[in-house]
Image (cartoon, rainbow, N blue to C red; front, side, top):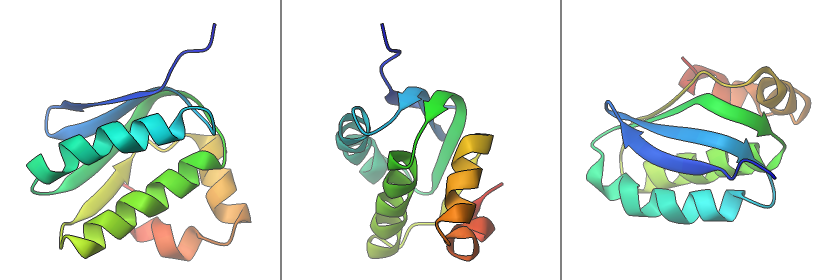
Length: 101
């Protein structure tokens, strides 16, 4: 059985866990939209993500759009290698790289 992706607030970061893919990304986005207004700055921690496909990049872009629209700082940390590769291949490295810790 797949490890369903989840997001939760932990130690000032928004921690994503499980398999982040096309089947789970909308659930994570929806859950995150409940947490984001409570955060003064957005720091997404991917250290517990076990699998990630291109839907993860789309999710990152949605969070970037939210941050810009709501004048919040945003950072991503512990990005999985497979997600870094997708960012690079998709031509988004320059857009996202300054946000990755």
